[in-house]
Length: 321
Image (cartoon, helix red, strand yellow):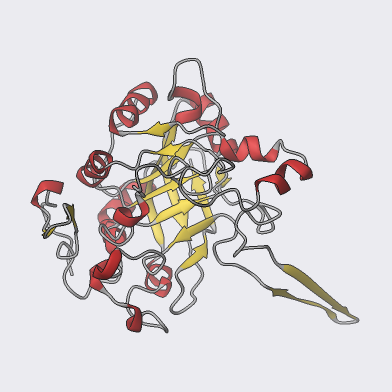
């Protein structure tokens, strides 16, 4: 389906009766499997390509074996096997988690209560290849204008600890964009640097091991804290009304942790908006480059793994400036 000439505002989206939550399931048609990746039209990709001025390529992926150990008990890390023969060699990986390192959360990752996944897709439709699987993003690719929102540099006067609960809302997005001399555009891939990845990289192995399993239930005393996106409905409205194609962070959940008041923005962004979420990305080299040249917009390229039916994928992402 063609992208509508005019995208509806948040308050124009249909509302689930009695829940006070709105969804974008009708925006791109009832059989849509791409969500807001639809916004990456040929025209927007071509316009983004014109941002390439120096031919400088910057990687956004952590090594696949990082973070180590895995941050979540369900994603403990993998074992890499290397077989060397007289003729060369081959590799295999056991226990590889598609969302264990720099990752895309796909549209099968989170559902909204009994209403289901994006487009109302229910469990029986996501047990194999088909609706809203990662293969749809992989076939199209994720290419367009990327922008860096450098929260760590511009977000809070006097700085902040990335391992503290600092929430980024719409007005703060706008403040940072103004400081960077950029404007939001429909279809942006928004990269949000909190400084979490850099601080994590500075920990010794004991410090990293102490964090495993600490990202868990709401407001538990040993719950890991991190800066990220605010989880309120007002911020969800701000996000939708600016129509990004994707939101990506350098922290474990994109959002500020711990979850408070049982509000979790994943449950809006993924199933309600059909919008990709990126987590555990590496923005340190990019942030240094942007600070040097003062340019916070660039051509963005990502090729998710073509795994039919997957709920997530490594990002395989680069910026070209």
